[in-house]
Length: 243
Image (cartoon, rainbow, N blue to C red):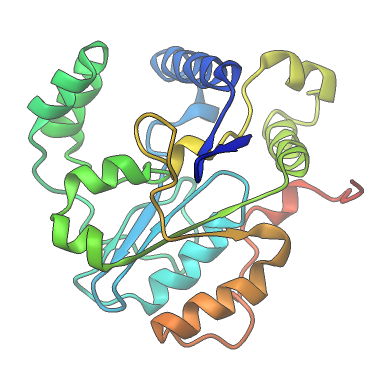
């Protein structure tokens, strides 16, 4: 990644990889692949504490959202987790979606837009990008709420992603086979604008310093925090933590 005039940009090859990941994801979803479940997405909008949490892949996002869901109020938006996690209570994520703007912007995704609007009615969902959240909430909410996510060392993130898929496939998946698929946990598009040229969340926390940085954010938002999230979701997949 390089920085140009104060804006972070990705090389063109990364955007090609994103497009390919999206194509493979769509094909896998239509094929009924359980590892690419269409509901496997999540985010939180808290009116109680005035924040928006954008969940990224393989960055302790599930543990953070389980913790935050316990703090959220009855009118806050908390989307479901797949597979479900005990003590996590989704709420208020369904709602009307006007599909026309999204169809005009992405005509190749018309089926997905119509399905979301009239069948699933999932106005908000897990791993939802910040740019889409921005389009689906009032401007004053987006502008006034604190928006944050977590990012991680890319190689460590890939290893974590590999171990998760290897465990879900019965341990038969080798690292070489995983790498050959080319489907990696890329997060950059989740917290940037539609062009990928500008970060649009207020803070990107570092996974490697997660507890300390969460403590700073929670203190700023006045969310009770004793230094532990109380849960390590999906931590059972990886036992070898060597770099």
